[in-house]
Amino acid sequence: MNYAQHEHHDFLGASNQALADPPLQAALTRLTDTLMAGNRKGYAALADSSALRDHAKRIKEHTLAHLDRYLEQLEASVQKLGGRVHWAATADDARRIIVTIAQQAGCQNAVKSKSMTSEEIHLNGALEKAGVRVTETDFGEFIIQLAGERPSHLVAPAVHHTRESVARVLSQHLGQPLPDDPKSLALAGRRVLREEFRRADLGISGVNFAVAETGSIVLITNEGNGRLTTTCPRVHVALMGIEKVIPRMRDLPVFLKLLARGATGQTLSVYTTMITGPKRPGEQDGPDEFHLVILDNGRSRVLATPFRESLQCIRCGACLNACPVYRRIGGHAYGGVYSGPIGSILTPLYDSVTLNPHLPHASSLCGACQAACPVKINIPHMLIGLRALQHQHGQGGHGGRHRGRWESWAYRLWSVVLRRPWLYRLALRGARLALRRWDQDGWLTRLPGPGASWTALRDFPAPAALSFRQRWKKDLE
Ligand code: SF4
Picture 1 (cartoon, helix red, strand yellow):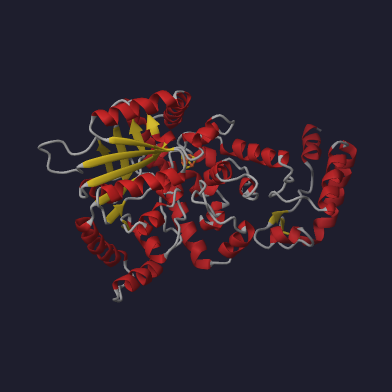
Picture 2: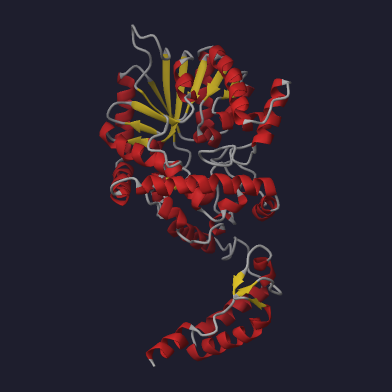
């Protein structure tokens, strides 16, 4: 099974469906507006957020340049503490390793804290097939597990749900009607999940950062479920991609300051948990066994390409909230485990550029993603790179489809006009005259022909009465 293993689905169809879903549109607007405002406020509260973000980027660049060294150091540190390290080249390997750990330890009930990497390898299905019951313990993840869905956001997996739909799903699970107020729902969720923690013999978590120097894994959560997952069961398996390693403990605060601010605008997430090996003699809490599974699954291949920068991602979700495309179509339309601008890069890279033709084009290249990103990843640049790759693969230049004859002619004509200033000026004048009849107070609200697809969803600015050059000339007079 490959990296994303998602249905190579109809991106345009799914996007149109999302656009025609008013509750989804309301939920997306509500969440992304709130998180984006938090992101801006969070950065503004730092003395020099830009310098801190540059610093974080330099740490990531350095780590990726010496990844082999730091991963080996991490392995040695974890082993010294009594933990076991497993290397998984593919998603298949990772699933097999985790299932074997569960079977050898005789585990039957697993609790899991939120982990996109475990979604990436489709872990739950493999464990269930091996007879291990898995319960997601992040409340949003729990709801989508009950609903049989995939996460639709990196940090808010159930963003596509309203409180009414959460009440419906939870009521169905409990076999009793629940009111749709958030407090009652949270209390009901807590009741169910506490029982699962009590029963669990296997805890599975992701890893936000793994410190090579000390062998500590760092989990950042807002619900505290990560702590219960990693301390109650007798076996703990932590799953991380190779890019999650950082060199030293003193690098960690740089990312702690940025991750929560990037994601939600919080100064710090509610729980920052550092786990340094299994339970030691004389300690009350913690697992008897600690396993760290380090996953490649296509990442080292990307390391050697111009798309290496994508491995700097700390999965904060800020680029999703800022992206005008994600904000309208939500996460499921992307089809892969990772959505939004960073998903439009990761899915084609790890899954297939050819089989995900629309993703590199699911962006206006406005740069809002890069502006919001705590490590300033140049997402637009990489999306353009992926478009160039598609072109090299003979996939045409637009959403991976070959251009029709009319479109090719239109581009040829466009290039002829752009190379001749006098013709360009003439064409502008002609366009201004032709579009005048649809002009309503400076906006074109209903265009004919191919322009109709644009104005079906938003207005188009009418051409200005005077071109820039005309205004410039006039001002000089
Ligand atoms: S690309 Fe940047 S903004 Fe997007 S999830 Fe990764 S770290 Fe966050």
